[in-house]
Image (cartoon, each protein chain N blue to C red):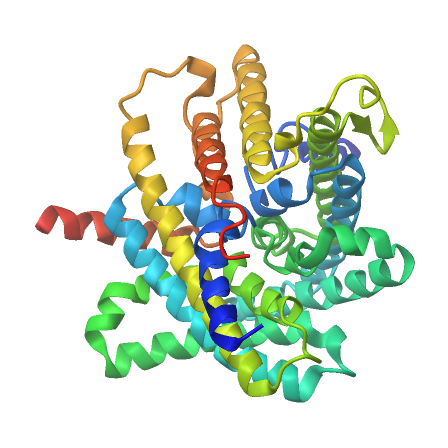
Length: 202
Length: 231
């Protein structure tokens, strides 16, 4: 497949057909827990996207040059430690040098270390793209695109769902369905509507 | 003393079931339960990690400095996850294939970090092991039940044996992502209805009370709301 076609299909997959939250179930905690207000949802997902891209930028070369093909079993330990260190570092760096961004996003950073979406995307980058088929440059480009599109997909799902939840607050719901159960059923319907995109982008 | 330990063990089975009562570990619950077999596999893998990490963390609880406890816990958990991952790969490759990246993602499964933080770092070795075992079995039971429900409706089989698949065409939607959200929602509603009948509090929110990231999460939503009010 040509590089540009590949990139377009990665973007479409992350946004619509293989949405991080609604079809891969990664990052469910912030999706169900935080997404009550649209602006919280947006800033949270910008922070997640930012960390996903930086985490991919650091972990993929580590995987390509150090871990594969002999030390792949260390992937889990190395990736989670690298991500934890990166998040700490970003927090310190932003606090010291770029105050406005820190004020807007900094509060979400500690939350993101244990977010399965971030660790998930770095691991998916390793399994999604065939390492024997492409050069490192292309693989790196695909992985970064994958992280970006997953982050944008996360944002799309969070924002859409924040809207749905605002409507749910005024709805008349049976006693035993109130709260979490009805939220989950609403998420099921959201995810059902995303199934309609299946097949787009190959 | 004995009854206290028994209490710790049975806590995770029903009263404080990690999935239905504490609402932790939602990601694997939704993702891998397309068949009862996968639920059992995921449950056992997570139980082994939970028991081992609880054991080691409670042994080291006086050694680990408070400030770096979360990174220390994550490192210990990641070590055990790698061990389990290699064992699963070697002995049950089919389960490894079915669980995919959700097997290494046990590292960030909030049940394990939450039990380390709430229980193992404060209690001695034996109760910590029992707590891990109880929570793990509770987790496995719910995952298996949910897997069986989705498999029954979505494929007409249970544990791979044909039940209705010969004469009714199955509803594949139950195996797809929406089915996961829907069945989980119904299970929580059912457990809420039962809890209410027994006079216990019902679960209305995500398991934020038991989440290790609760403090920073609260802070962030709070400051967001303040910012909105200021506008």
